[in-house]
Length: 386
Image 1 (tube, helix red, strand yellow):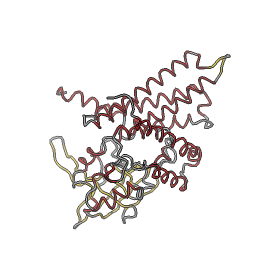
Image 2 (cartoon, rainbow, N blue to C red):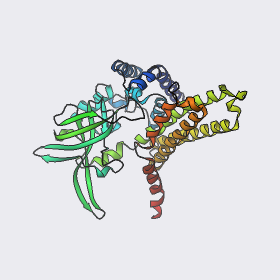
Image 3 (cartoon, rainbow, N blue to C red):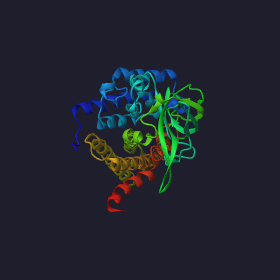
Image 4 (cartoon, rainbow, N blue to C red):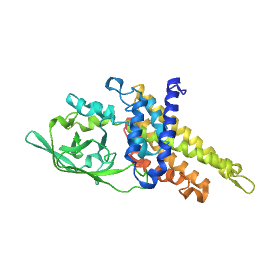
């Protein structure tokens, strides 16, 4: 791995960082106060991203995307991580699973998503099935030539703005030596389809304005044309296209940690107690040293995982390592920054308390820390027969 960035990659970093600072930062306080992204702000961010040529930058040029590789896209996500999730959502990175679209699906879903004409959301999690994807009870059964969906999904990010949802549901069950095993199929479901309702989800302390939604399916009828991939092939589609979503959590954690660190560093250099800057006290200076060391380590872990994907090398363990380390690093960095600020760190005069709250969810979504450690240990032990 070449640890230096090319001129083009450095340009990507500076362009996206400038965008976040100029187009995202100014609106953060209002979104934090109201819990809403004003429609005109969302529209403006989306259009400026399109004008910049970065909308759907994670898609290949052949379908109208910017054609960034995994490492370059990780750099984009790292810089976006500095800003509000609710606002940078409109920077526009459709789910790359849409590359599995075939035939008319490309014109109906893939290409409009890449052009920014339609927005998507991804739905797997259910009230009784989080990390245990095969535990889902949302199901689809054959009825004549159609599929009929029933069940509920929750914690669905971005569904409030989505024109269609990529939904994973159970479509059968196989008996195996280890017990029943559900077959999973992926469907493309349009907003407004009879029997499909999107409603408000729960109020979260993390990422205000970036809402989760609840999806209800009540005899929702779909055609075969809305099956993404093969029937009962949902896990194959998932494994081929969704493996890199954990890198997004890792990279955004690094970006947010660097922004938070800048606050800690400047405050330690400016704030005075007992006649000198608090950064001169070893109790503070050593925290600063530990923070930057952990941020750099998480950054390198993450970029290495993305680089391995670009090289066609196995990367499942490396991605899991990056996700668990970067998300837990972010928690430590935000907590240490708040401690350096003291009581003011908990006041909303500064964004520190927001960084602290926002950090908590990163260890949960896109695979909990426990799931990541399971992936890592399984990768190491299975070749040894353990």
